Structure formats: structure tokens, C-alpha cells
Length: 349
Image (cartoon, rainbow, N blue to C red; front, side, top):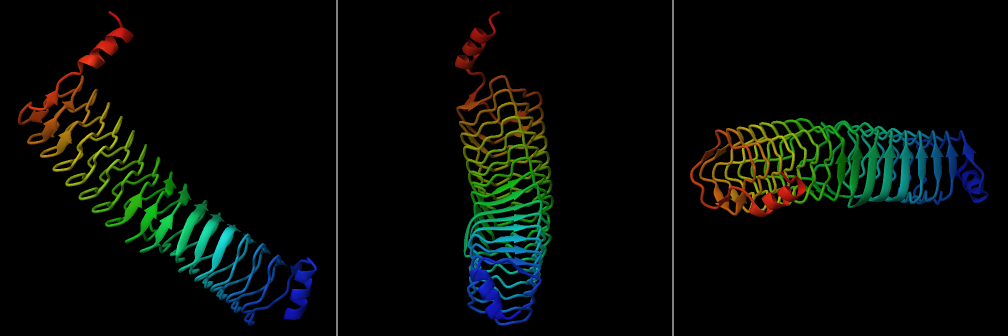
């Protein structure tokens, strides 16, 4: 099929089936609204082409050059885009279903409301210049390269992210829910206002990372490294941080309710106004930690080391402190009288 026939079919709203334009120069061509099925565009030059509102089904675009192309509203189903060049591409309300994008390059792409569902993204490069609401689910992302990327409202759901490259990345208001990040090395990264709910993160390295206002509810963080991290206002309710290294870190106004903290080390960390209600922190270390206005009500602190910690209005209401070590009791509120009275009203006698 010639290019003129292709354009004529598109103008008349007719589907194009089984045609081949492999290796051809289609740079700047207007394919908006195209319905392409089993069309071979591998190695084709589609630089600056317009594929807005197009529907591509079982097409081949391996090694195609789509640099600076527009795919606004495009629907891509069971297509191959292996090693495709998508640098500076414009995507808005674009959806990829069951497609192969291994080694595809999205460098400096503009991506808004883009979804990858059951896709192959192994060794792809995801470093968009504009990123807002990218969803990746049920996909393979082995060695996905996000190094240095700025990612806003990115969502990974139930994904294996152990080999994704996040070095120096900055994620903001992103969701990594029920994902596997075990052993990930995320030093010096920034995950601001991110959700890690119920994710597997044993032995993850967040040293010197910025995790402000992020939520780790229910996450498994055993032996994780948060040393030197800035996790102010972060939330760890019901999370498992047994044997975690949380030393020399900033955890101002953080939440640790019902967390498992046995053997965790918070030495020299800032924890003012933090809440440890019902936390299990047996044998945890808080030496030289700033615990001003922290609340350990009902926490289990048996055998914990709190020597040289700084206390001021630090509450230990009905906390278990058998064998816990303190350098002094100044600044400690042993029991909260108002809370006692409330409990008596609720449970008289």
C-alpha cells in the first residue's frame, strides 16, 4: 500500500489492515484518527507524526522513530514497540494494553494520564520532561531506567520493582502500592508524599533519602536502612521495621502506631511530636534521640535503650518499660491524668 492510499483510507474512516510501511519515511505525516490493524511500521520514520485519537492493534513499531510525535488519545493494543524512539513524544490520555515496549526510550516525553496495562517495559527509559498521572500495572519492568527522573503522580500497583533504577530520582505524590522493592538501593532519592502501603521492602536502603510526608502503612521494612533520611511527617502505622537502622534521621511528627520496631535503632534521630501508640519496640535503641512531646502510650519498650535521650513532655502512659534503660526521668510524663479519667469513664470499676 502506498502512503497516499493510507491517508485516503484514514480520511474516509476506513480501517487499514495488514499493510506494510516498514522502514519508510512518514515523518510529520497526519495519521490522526487512524484505525491500524496488523500494520508493519517497524524501523519507520514517524518523527513529528500525528497519531492523535488513533487505534493501533497488533501493529509492529519495533525500532520506529516516533520522536516528537503526538499520540494524544491513542489506544495501543497488543503492539510491538521494542527499542522504539519516543523522545519528546506528546502523550495525553494515551493507553497501552498488552504491548511490548522493551528498550523503548521515553526521554523528555510529555506524558499526562498515560496507562501501561499488562505491558513489557524491560530496560525501557522512563525519563519524561512532563509527568502527570502515569499508571503502570500488571506489567514487567525489569531494569526500567528512571535514573534522575522527576515523576509526579506515578502509580505502580502490585509490581515487582526490585530492579527498577531509581538513582537520583524525584517522585512526588506517587503510589507504589503492594509492590516488591526488597533490597532496592534508594540512597539520595526523593519520595515526597508517596504511598508505599503494604509493600514488601525488606532491606531497602533509604539512607540520606527525602521521604517527607510519605506513607508506609503496613509495609514490611525489616532491616531497612533509613540512616540520615529526612522522613518528617512520614507515617509507619502497622509497618514492620524490626532491626531497621533509623539512626541520625529526621522523623519529626511521624506516626508509628502499632508498628513492629523490635531491635530498631533510632539513635540520635529527631522524633519530636511523634506517636508510638501500641508500638512493639522491645530492645529498640533511642540513645541521644530527640523525643520532645513524643507519645509512647501503651507501647512495649521492654529492654529498650533510651539513655541520653532528650525528653520534654514525653508521654509513657501505661507503656511497658521492663528492663528499659534511662539516664534520668526529667521531662517524662509517666501517666496522663486526663487519659486515666477518660478510661475510668469508659470502663467504670
